[in-house]
Image 1 (cartoon, rainbow over the protein chains, first blue to last red):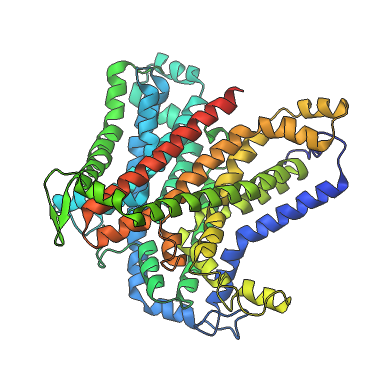
Image 2 (tube, rainbow over the protein chains, first blue to last red):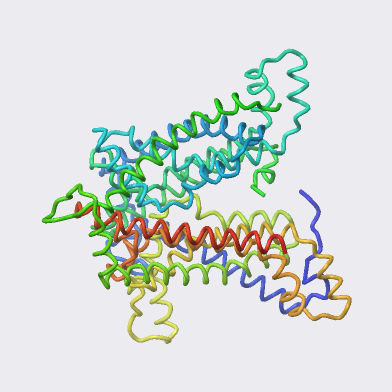
Length: 279
Length: 282
């Protein structure tokens, strides 16, 4: 671990009161951030269906109720499939695209980059209705294919930004050396470039999966019951009922997200994740 | 390895192909509906401005646009107002790098959990007999529960929570790259901390503030889950208008509302993008 550095108290002459105040604010901020997640976990063990604080007693009945609802299990597996396939597709297309953006200069490159990033600021509901009409015209309704295609577009900009930032930091002389020694461009990409951007691939893959796993309004018109994804199943359930079944499911999802982040953090050890921040 | 023109084009093909077919075409196919008519519960595919005219003649449309803009302004102001001191405290008042990383991760941790889950958390917290109302009542501050749900208050609180990491992150990133010797020099020359903050630190960190505003404003403008679940029908914003029109099969009217939403988003991106270039150059 790096050395602790002295506090920057507006550069020296720290007011102890100001430092205490700022630190207290930081604690409150962390509390505010974690509170909604913490309360969901507490409520998942509540003994009653109605929301009251503190819960009058504790039970596991909402977990039992959740287990009895096959719809959530199916939706979870569908979200998993859509997330993994869309992430893989976006990583493949995004890597090639980021290589071209970083390693070649052509007219209109910045405009192209802006276009590729634009789905981030595009209102998802507008895209969602667009896909609904588009896939209906093609008679491609239901199933997972429209969802996978739609999610690929939604996560592609995140993959392109992170991989491009990662590629900018690479030392080109390594690739030149490989090519001088007779490696083909494909071999150079596979054996020299990819190992160096492992961190970028892992982080952008994780982000892409999380973003895909969280789509509601972009996908709500692409599902028709039989192919509901998990967030949509939860959203529709919450429009009707508000018992702690959703809290039990949310608690499992919080654990799932924590495990996912831990696995990726472990796999990305030794890579300089700070370099991935776009400047 | 440098990449030449033709190879670059080849590498761009998969991404651009996907974007053309699955992004440009669906948007176009949808938005042209705004130029069609909707009569007697059916879409009439003639080219006309009648739907657009009707939208802008209806006072309800202006209420929806105003509600969207107001929500975005309030949420952006709150996320900046809370996010800036948090980023500032994290960078200047936490000395140990390990503690900084852990606190930073805690602040960003909600991002990995679905918006639906986070909104649900606020649904429990803000309920009449939920934590917030119960604590306020026990403290003797209120007699009857405050109606915090199914109105603007609930949506604002929840959306501020959801977008807070997007404000902390860019501001922290700029603060951590700042050259603090300037502040130190000002300090040596006798400036007090308010002067140092207002005249040196804040102007230097403006790129982070503008970037944070851009993200928070556009994301609150297009927020859907939170206004739908916590607004109780009282927070009628553009994304809900688009959703409801689509449910009623009134694609033309939805397309006009969608176009307005799109134009507002792009206007915000353009304005704040220019502001970002200005403050970055300064």
